[in-house]
Length: 102
Image 1: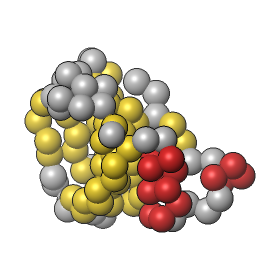
Image 2: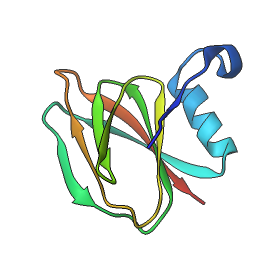
Image 3: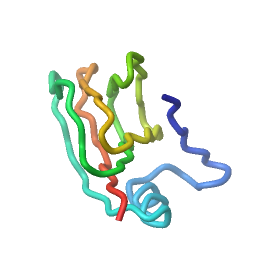
């Protein structure tokens, strides 16, 4: 589990519009979510390939026995059928772009 990090020299300044455009160009449909502090998603799966992108806040993701902390500009691939969990671990809401493979 290795997050992708926003590269301002390649992708330009990190904005919601820029991250959305990047994900759409990769073949994903994108939805925006805001998760307040304390939000926890217990272990679960999805029937689709996804990428979770973080625009603000800190999101701890667990997958396949490992955890990673996602912050602004981080993107993490979540393959279909893989058990994972997520938790907002800051006093700031997480603003997330949830991308689903088309």
